[in-house]
Length: 348
Image (cartoon, rainbow, N blue to C red):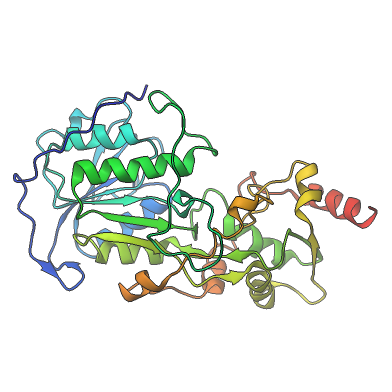
């Protein structure tokens, strides 16, 4: 059970941070990663270890518990007892698994000023529906309505709860924190198969169902590129979109098709309403907004700030190449269902 606790700014004078370099801190740091063994956190852990940092992972021990024997593992459920953090001190804390503001409160209380600089992984879903492309980090955020205490995070409340998490973190960890707002994160170990689905589907060839509007603004970020940048940013504050430049969904799929699809492959664009009426959503067909009007411009965030802060990204085909052999999650559209939908579309 998540319990709401009134925010209280915790002391920070018990931690002496190392001197900052041009981009964060320039020496070996003691880094706490909350999460760190599944996807975004897994790549972050790899990047932090590769950079020579001393890494501690706080996780439940349920997902890939044998990964990273060179790191210290603290096993705990952040929604319950975090006393395992007592006596530990860190130069930086990176929170990958914060979805409810009370999780931020309990973490801050358990660290009690010993967590060092704080980084929070948020989302572009935190924004109020953008009116157009190129929105920046100071665009209006969602306002949460309704109760918070004891309320589970759902697809409908995900974005607004992330906003509450950001605000709670700022209150408790101070204004120097780093807030990261990614769009679609892709790459090896993605449990949602966002890029995996399209790379593998196009590689099979034939008639490929493409969802919705071909002009849908789309942005992806390879989890490895995001992780490398976040590690370089340890100790540095600000709010950043971790995104690549926006492209139409059709352009992204055409680029993948040019790399992986056999001759004769075709894309058949099927409109939002048709798919929605048949229970198809953005989980089954990744990178698609599911026909939700409020989400249309979500893949059009301005990347200027993060590029200026040093983010370097790889080509999307390189990311796709690395997930071609990945076992696909059963959450995505099955081949038989795709064939049924294409037949129904053709006979409408």
